[in-house]
Image (cartoon, rainbow, N blue to C red):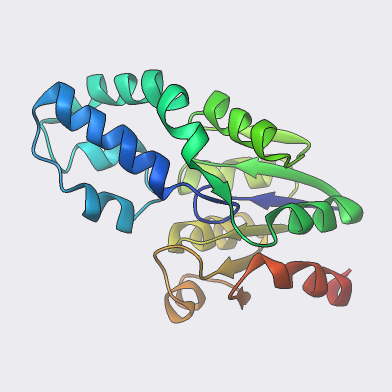
Length: 198
């Protein structure tokens, strides 16, 4: 039985509209100059890391807390599943366990899953790069599915098989160079891949 890990943003869900709206509010409240178009074009890193590109690090930590505070009330209704997400997770669960490993705040990630009807066995939040690899190793995961080069680096570091999906900011060549063993254009193709590699 295989444990499969999934990333969330731009792997299972199109979070760009919701994240854009939250950043617009942060700009309004903080007065910081943030190019929100740039932010949503490179989703993946933790919010602290992104905010540190636009404001002093001490301020970034404080506004990251504010981001997480207001996120559920602003973002949830604006975010939808990507094509094939539910079926992909269901296919993974038919092979064993499906876990979510995301840089997003775990309570917010759980709210997305509940609202969108995606059922996983466990949620691990605030994990990024080596933090994702740590979870993959601890959970004995055999596969990690994600859209970002750092997802594939985490898979490779942990010994899991990396399945990249080109629904986020990274293209197929970038995902392969980062360690993806297989690259899909859509999660709609993942059940077929599982059927071949069970």
